[in-house]
Image 1 (cartoon, rainbow, N blue to C red):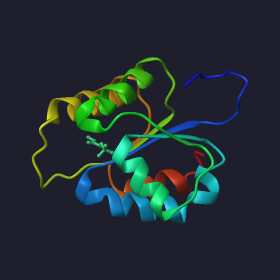
Image 2 (tube, rainbow, N blue to C red):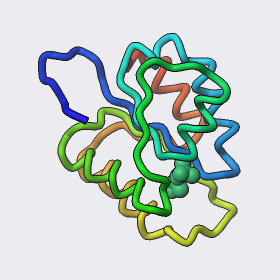
Image 3 (cartoon, rainbow, N blue to C red):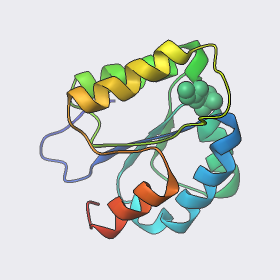
Length: 131
Ligand SMILES: O=C(CO)COP(=O)(O)O
């Protein structure tokens, strides 16, 4: 995904662990009008669940998280191509790709981009008028 400096749209990464995908899909549904004015990028399975519940013009998908998708999004953050990370993590379930999850959230902090790991924080970012 290219990042055109003259394009006023932001790029938002949307990711959720399996037990949080429904929550993310309903959050996206609630904010679809605003979100779809921007570029959206999602890991494969998350993007599928979102697309099944809400139709979005601007959603592209990278690989599934455990197959490298989290690292793809992390690389985009390192290239300054992501403005907001909405990543609903599941703190109750172990994940085989936990190191990738940690690397992704770490890079969001390193590059100081807003990151929401829960509905409450994601709602606050929307209420702040960030998008
Ligand atoms: O595993 C993920 C985040 O760590 C998300 O990947 P999927 O959207 O493919 O399930």
